[in-house]
Amino acid sequence: MARTPAVGQWRAAALSQDRVADYKPFVMVDGEGVRCSLYVSGCPFACAGCFNEAAWSFRYGTPFDDALADRIAADLAHEAVQGLSLLGGEPFLNTGACLRVVRRLRAAHGRAKDVWCWSGYTFEELLAEAAAGQADKAELLGELDVLVDGRFELAQRDLTLAFRGSRNQRVLDVPASLAAGRAVPRGGLVAAGDVGTPPDRRALI
Ligand code: SF4
Image (cartoon, rainbow, N blue to C red; front, side):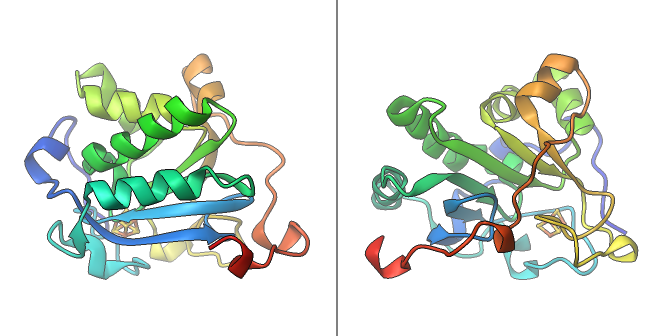
């Protein structure tokens, strides 16, 4: 059983070490289209069966630094790239690095490129965190286009689902959800296997 924090209990300011487990440019499995994926380090949800248990430690991986920020910005500028994907670890407990990358993307590309995020928090939990004054979580949520939310539940694992591992998790349209004040599923999902012939990755690097 994954852990569930009280509202405001877990904060990036106290937990994050600003480290990343991995960065993968030009991938086609972490959301729709060609994407640049940042995997941050540290996740206290501790879901049984987690796909990335090594990244539970906030000290795992390497420091997020200016060189990586510049590299991500340059990769995101490629015309074939649809957007940024934030994964973990827990992005909402690593808001320093995530917001740096997202703010730079928005400054350069506005909403022409999208931001997807996988979080162990549910949308409702993030709304409660924002209402309780967790400004970094509120800002990151407000910048997302798509949120894949909730803990991975081993008893509900379903490998046929697009972009998520268990049936309790949802793929949400964040602007629509924020406007409605409730979770709104993202329609018209295009799974990785449905997007046609992938581009030659070597031409993008
Ligand atoms: S929330 Fe995600 S990264 Fe964190 S333990 Fe659960 S499955 Fe792993």
